[in-house]
Length: 365
Image (tube, rainbow, N blue to C red; front, side, top):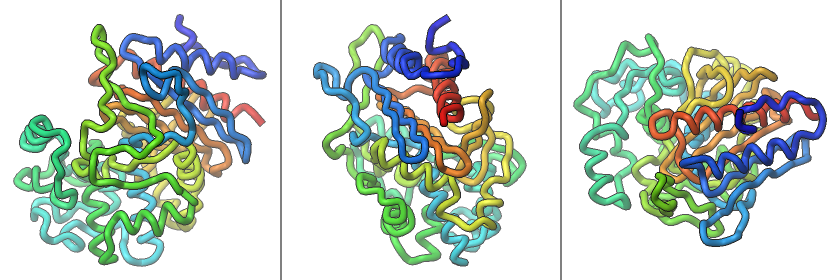
């Protein structure tokens, strides 16, 4: 059995074992050129690195390197919208028809709550043939982020809202548009006011273009036997926007998930609603058994429970998680895309490694 699939159950200092497991991910077939995990307990951080930040160099991955955070950006949408609920600007039962009447009538009964826990039935714009054709034709194409739902505007809901779970990138586009509609402010400005400033996130942004700020972890397409191809700046962030366009660093993501999962941004009343769980996994699935709340997931591992989110995007795979009190946190970042469709075996190895890190996080005092 690979070290990366072994349960790190032996009490004591297992740092060497965890480092080996992370290293083995980078040398696995299709594995990332670089990987970093940050364990933080109280004010003490422990950083685990493997591989390099850029192939052909010896530069190690750093906790201050920028990267695309992929669908973990959906948690930031939650942080904005749930604070607007607290402020009376939105209600969880507000409908698309009430707040965004220009959207298709067939979608009008979908609620904010259903968008946040992926039970809306909204068709996924990122799977629309026209959208995919445009991205294929010009990956750096600049999309009007606020019109992304137009690609599926002629499609009905996939199911009766609230009746089942189906992860959709459209959900968080709609949430951001709702936030803009009730405040009259740009989503990017709401992020700055409600998320970046309160949590002191100084290296986090939501760009429209394809460029990465220096320094950054280079993201790669790793498809053996071809050498890794640098795709860090191949795609424009405008085509994912509130569903996955944020750029951040492991350091900033650590600060975010501690505040967000720890309930520091919302009232106890709103948090109780956020933590009402339904059956559903993040994409890619996180460690252990997954359940979906409002823009947050519960990961129930053999060692205990953490709250967080995962994400994947060409060149990057992410996990952010923290204990319910926010005092212990874990971020894991890889520099290639790993999901159930493109690399199912590697995803299972990754989830095993993530669970071992969660166990270390929960065990250590």
